[in-house]
Amino acid sequence: MSLPPRPRPLGTEAPPTRAVPPFDPVRVRGGRYRLQRLLRHRGQAVAAGLAVTAVALVAAGPRTEGAGTEPRGAERAHGRPVADPARPHPPVELVTAPVRIADAATVRLLHSGDRVDVIAAEDASAGAGVRVLARGARVTEVPEPPPGATESGALVVLSVPRPTAARLVGASATARLAVTLC
Image 1: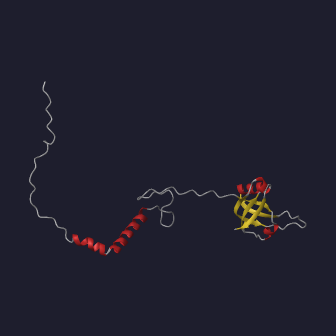
Image 2: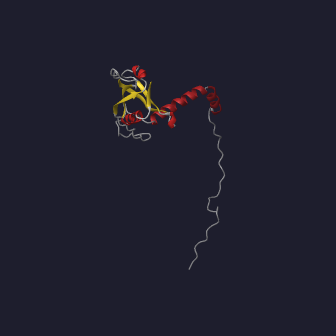
Image 3: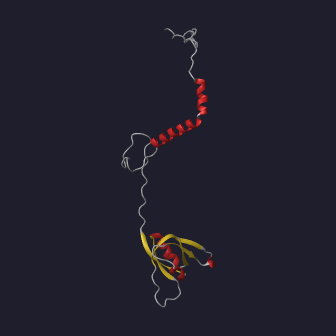
C-alpha cells in the first residue's frame, strides 16, 4: 500500500519570478491641463451634468396616462415597473337634509349654492362645548318661514353625505345649530 503524495508547502506552486522588461513611460496628452480647464468652466460643466441628470430622471421616472403613453395594464420595456394606478374613491352619496338653525336672521343671509359649516353649540352646563358637524355643506334651498312662525329658528336644506346628515339630525335634537359661510 502506497501513501498519497505529500502536499507541497504553500507558495512553491507559483511560477518563478522574472525581471520586468524595460518600457517607455506612458504619457497622457493634456492631462495636467484638463483639471484647470474644468475648474475654469465649472458653470458649464454643472449645467451639462444637470441636463444629463434631468434626461435620465425623465427616461426612468414613472409614466402617467395621457397622450403618447401606453394604456393601463401595458408593461414598459425599460425602467422600473409602473405601480398600479390608484383606484378612484367611489362617489359619495349626497342626500338633502333639512336642518333647523337657531338664528333665523343668519338663515335669511343664505342663498342656494352657498357653502356653509354647521356648528353645534351644546349645553355648557353638561360639560359639552362647540363642535363642527359639517364642513363645506352646500345650501340647496332656504324655505320661506310660514306666517305666524315662532322665533324657534329657521329651516335650511343642505346637501351633505349620508353620514353627515345623520350627525346633523342627531345633534339638532340636543344642541343649538349655527352656520358660518365658507
